[in-house]
Image (cartoon, rainbow, N blue to C red; front, side, top):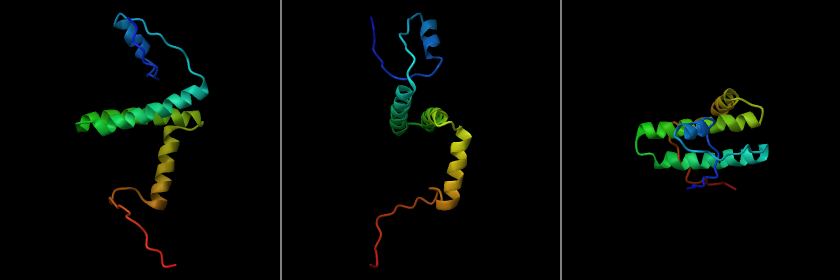
Amino acid sequence: MLKIYNKLVRDNIPEIIINDGCKPITRILTDEEYKRELEAKLLEEYQEVLKAKTANERIEELADMLEIIQSLAFLESKTLDDVIETAKVKRLKRGGFKKKIYLEGIEYNK
C-alpha cells in the first residue's frame, strides 16, 4: 500500500521510516522548490501552534517553526543569529509585543 504525503520532512525521517520496516519514496528538491516547501511548512507549523492544547505542545510546534525559520535564513545566506539580531534591533526601535497593545485606529487631525 502506498500513502502519498508530498511534503518536506526533517532530514532523519527517511531513516526512521526504514527502521520502521517501510520504504520511503523521496527526491531532493531544487532550491526554488525547497524555498516554496519551507514556506508551506512554516504555515503548516503555525496552524499546529494554534491547535496546540498544552504549553508543551505549543513549545514543540514553536520549535518546529524555529527550525524552518533557520532554514529559510540559510537560503538568504544568513543564520538564526542574524534573524535574532535583526529582531533585537527592531525591538529597540519599534518595541516588542509585551505590552499587549491593540491599535483600533488612528484619528488624524488633517
